[in-house]
Every structure is written in structure tokens, then in C-alpha cells.
Length: 308
Image (tube, rainbow, N blue to C red; front, top):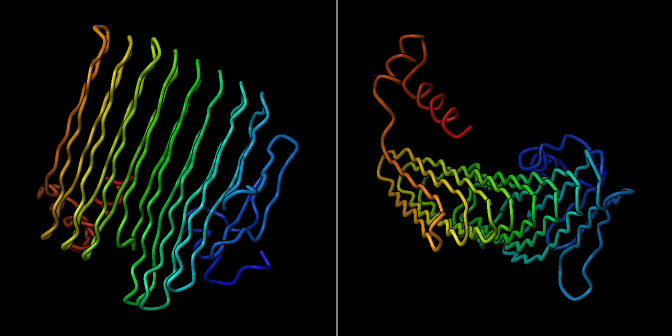
């Protein structure tokens, strides 16, 4: 990674687990421009010509393939907008590792908005991991606003892991999914906010096809004076199954709202939702402290396990 400095490498390791250039296809974007790109025999990455972003095309039947598409922002006052499209060919099986890290060195806000459109074709499988992270002691905010739209064709499967690690001052996350016959989706969202940070997440899944299924799992921790709002929605339009689960730990003066919704528009739609917000259990802290941990160490241990 000769073109990247120490800050870049730290961000790539944090949001994408990259210690070096990965095997497979990759595209690294820094401060509004693609700087390093690699396609493979089964995965083609093509820069868009009409707007910033890339098209990622996975050939039908490709197996054991991976794509890394991290974004780095290290410039003060930069507003970056990117449009990425993904076509996962029929019968393919692919891992896509995204994520964005912002290192804001100044007092002006730095912001990245990413719009990702996926189509998971018949019988294909996709695992998508997206991590967001912010750092820097400046007064400038780190702002991330992702929008993700997924279509899963017949017999397709998608697993999406959406994570906000720390340091992001403001985020508005929109996720939309449409599932067709016998398509399946698992969304796992994990969020950590502290200080005066604000996070809003909207997830809407439409189960259009017969025997489609979805599971939405949201886990969050709100600390200090931070605020969080969650709107997970599952809409059953056919014989289908969906489960929406939201769990949150609230600390200090944080505020958390969880508003799960299920809507059945078919007599054979089986939809369930549940939500819970609460403090760390005192007995958990006591047990860990009897093992030699301080109260703060015990808290961090519990929170890491909860957000795993």
C-alpha cells in the first residue's frame, strides 16, 4: 500500500480489516477519487461515466470471491457523494466489504454520502459488511449518510452487517430491500454513539414473493448525551415470514427511540417484532468486578459482548 500513509492504513484496517492489499477485486476511494483499483477474472469493477462511483459485476456462478470497496476521508470540509451499483450474477457466492472512515483534521465538517444499489440474482448469495468510523480531535463533524437498496431474486440470499463503530457525529442510514420468491435476507445492525452524537436508522423490507423470509436484528449502545432513533419495518405482501428484533443499552443521559413496525397485507404473512431498551444489569457488573475488573473495564467488556 505504497500510495497510502499511516492514517489511511489505520482507517483501512479499522473499517475493512485490510492490513495489505486483499486478494480478489478491490477499489479504494480517498477524498473523492478512486486511487487504487483491481478487477479479477470473475469480478469486474467499472468506473461510472455519468456520476462518481463504480459498477461491480460478479459473473454468474462465481464462488469464493471477494470485493473490498472502502472509502477514506482525511480532508477538512470535504463533501463526498458516491453511487455504487452491484450485480451479483445467478448462482454466485460473494463477500463484499465496504465501509468508510473519516479522519477530520480541522474545524469544518467532513461528510460522505454513499448510495449503493444491489441486485442479487436467482440463486446467488451475498454477504455484505459495511463499517463506519470517525476520528480526530477537531471541532469539525464527521458525517456519514448511507443509503442501500437491495433486490433479491428467486432463491437468492443476502446477509448484511451494518456497523457504526465510534466517532461518527451524525448519521442517517436508509436501507430498503425487496424480496421475491423464496428469497431470504438477514440484516444485522450494530450502533455505538457517545458524546453529543446523533444516529437515525430506517430499514424497510418488502416481502413480495411467496415463501420469502427476513430477519432484522438491531443492537445499539447510547452513551453520554447521544441520541438514537430506529425505524425497522417489515411488510408482508405474500406468504412469508419476518422477525424484527431491536435491543439497546442506554447509559448516562442518552436518548434512544425504537419504533419497529410490521404490516401484513396477506393472510399467510407471519410477522413478529420485539424491542427492548434498558441499562446494564447490575449483577453482570458485580460478577465481572469480582473477577478483578474495575467498574469501567466491566462495562466495556459487557458492551463489547453486546455489540458483537
